[in-house]
Length: 495
Image 1 (cartoon, rainbow, N blue to C red):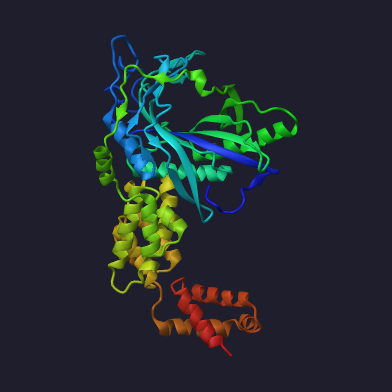
Image 2 (cartoon, rainbow, N blue to C red):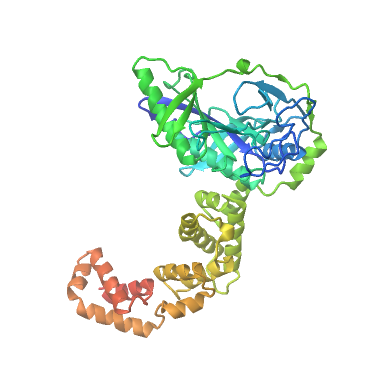
C-alpha cells in the first residue's frame, strides 16, 4: 500500500486483506479444448471429451488465452515468464469431472506487478504476487431439482486468469477500490467482459486481524464474491467476527467461508487447505509454456493507451481533478464518449476555455448521464444522446441561453428522443432573458415591492438577498439569468 498515513484501525485492531480474483478470459473456446465458452447454453451441451479428461484425450493450450495473460502482465508492469509450467491441482468435488484442475503453481506466467488507483483523493498502489492461467470447474445447481442437486459442466475448462494480490489492503473500502480498478483494467484491455452476474469476474478475499506491529493473524478466505457491495459487506462482517472471537479468548481457525447476502453474514464451508493438500505436480500431458520475447513485444505494440496513462493525460491536458479523470477512464466506451463531448464543445465558437469545457463535460457524465444509465441498466454505448448533442446543451448553459435547471429539462427531452437542443429550448420556453433592460425593470420592481428584504440585506443578512433573487426569478417566470439578476441586484443595492 502506498504511504498515506497510518492504516485505519478497527477497535484497536489492524485489518489485513489480500484478494484472489478470477477473471474469465474473453476467448471463444476453452483453455485446453475447442469447446465453446458461450454463456447461457443448455446444461452440459458445451463440455467435450477433453474437458472431461476422457481416456485418449490430450489438452492443447489456447493461444488467445495466453496472449490475454501477456496483455495483463504488461499492463501492470509485471514480469512475463519466458517459461512457465502447467500443473495439476488435485481435489475431489462433484463439479470437477477430471478429479483435478489444470492450473499453474510454482512458475506462473505473470509474476509481480501492481494495481494503482485513487482512494478518497489519494493515490494507492497494491502489489500483485502473480497472475496465472487455469481452467474453471463446472457448476453445481441446487434449485428446481426436487431436493436434489444437478451438475452443469458447460463451464468446465473455461479459461481463467487468477490474479493474486499481496496482503497490502487495510480496509474493506480499499479492497473494493482495488477490485474496481482491476475490473476496469481487464475490461479496458479487452481480456474479460467483466460481467459479475455471469461470474466472469469474481473475488476471493483473504482476511485476518492483528494488533499493530504484530505478525499476521490467521486468515479466513471468503469465496466467490460477485459484486463490489457484497465484497465490502463480507469483509466488514468477517472483521467484526474475528475481532469478537479473539477478544473472547477463542481461536480463529484457518477456513474457507461463504457470504450469505440475505443475512449479511459469513459461514464456514470447510477447513482451509494448504498447497500441499492439493498435491500439485507438473501436468504430464502439457509441455512447459514457452513465450518468446518477440511475442511479448508484439503484444506490447498492440496495447491501447492504459487507463492510468489516459487519466494522467486528462489531468495534464484537460485540467481534470484526479477523481474526475479516473471516472472518465472507467471504461473504453466511457472515455471515448467523454473525449467526443469535449472535442465537440471545443469546436463551438465562443465557448469557455478547455479546462472549463472538460470539467462541465465530466460533471454531466458523472451526474445526470450516469444516473440515467444506471436507472435503465444500460451501457454508454446504448445512450440515446449523441456526444455532439450533449456538447450543444452544455454550450447553451455556458452562453447563458438556458439555466442549469432548464438544461435538466432539455436533457430529459433529449433522452426521450428529441434531436435538437435549440428546438427543445424554444418548444418548452426555457430560454433565459437576455434583454438587460427588461431584466433591470424587473429588478427595480422587486426592490420596490420588498423594502423589508432590502433593509435586512443592507443590515448584513445574506438570506434576504437570496430571497430577492428568488423574487426576480419568480417575476421573470424562471427566465432571468440568476447570475445577471444577482449582479444587478448587488449593484442597485450597493450603498
